[in-house]
Length: 441
Length: 179
Image 1 (cartoon, one colour):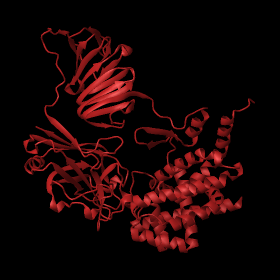
Image 2 (cartoon, rainbow over the protein chains, first blue to last red):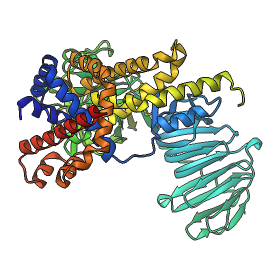
Image 3 (cartoon, chains in turn cyan, purple):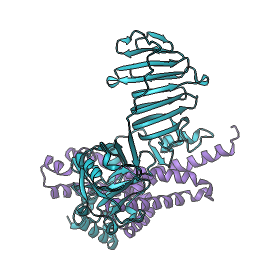
Image 4 (tube, each protein chain N blue to C red):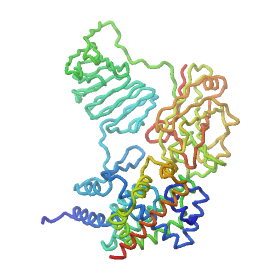
């Protein structure tokens, strides 16, 4: 078998090195007989595919991400025909909005729904990682959530709280609003009640603040609760009512005292060693270590500035990042565990403009202090990463500055070229929050 | 027959034209886009563009030429995106354009040969030959393991697979020419 023939078959098996692809490329261009052999091989391939690959119902979904809404389009042979067959079918079928995010108070979210204050929300799951937020359903019902909490928005008249604490306010327009929990649901017949999910969803405590609600357990029993009464839903059903005496203060959601959350205000950027900006994306903070001379190595930099606090009085510090998929590179070309390093610099680092920052202009890790490390398994696509180390706390406390810049690098490389690039949400990411620094005093 | 509204009429026209060509466009794309999952994505993009721009098409007779043109464009866009991601592990634009042109011209012939393979030539394969070809389409398998399974070196295995496929192509040409 000739050398070029072997290159063809290995190309189809995605098993060629850079030099080999270039040889094949040139040979194909110059040699029309080789191209004919190539066409024959790929044509056989199309036949084999039809023969061997299971024919799944051709209903693939394409998602086009726009800044604040997800657009879903159905298109392929059969389903394509079906879609067009429906007269008046709107090609871009936006999901119906059932609620709005009325307010965010130092809130850090994780959700595929938009998370900026004022956003329209459709049915979906929202996880509040920190802070307090209010969601107003279009029926008028309002749910105030305290982190950590997780709520599933179902319809304008129904939501499901799977974790955390919430207070539900229901005006007349939304009487009958239902809040489901893992152990049952509550239907509002009055104006306000509090819910607390404990024991990983096994116990749901309800307390009526104003008005009346009815509780329903999966077993079928139900109980009417009046103002100031509370009860618990669990696996066994509904527990007895506890009537509170008037003097007892109504328990308010416990907020963490004196916690300040700072974001980067746009001062977050990825840099790439070869400065080819086409390989970066504003929505992501990209991190990668590649092989060889690392032309595609990327790092993320982000900056927090706060003049109004005394950094030396911090008791606790926490940096939160949201890991998000960015679709660049192959997961399988990464080692099973990927290790990351976080460095910090105190004070002004000389970076005037955060846009189009070049590799050579950015501060280096050599001049910075290592303040944290973490690992992400290669199978993990998304998640909230929290760094809370002594090194970080000490660094922030003892440097007498009101501005801190962080450099995030990946310590582990890839096993083969075009391994996956890790990405964390930047401030402009449409779904997840950018880096957040939390300080407790 | 009930008179169709203009919108319905347009839908019917598009569907008639598109479904007749869909398999051929898919095969064309597949010959140029070497990753199966990518070929599917490219196909969907093409379908959407053809639908969106259908109004701009002046004559139904041009549909084939037009749709292959859109397909070629999308294949090149795929190549560009892949080049960014895979960093030089793709064929050059010149080569892909050259091949796209030749594949377009020969599309009908290749489609006939593909049918011949499916309906006639595959049946002539020996059991182990068919098994080896099939295993290569198994997402779970990897080539070194397969080579070992069939008792060959990796190079030897690739040679073997190449030859089996070549023989299928030769058989297909004989059958297609005989028509």
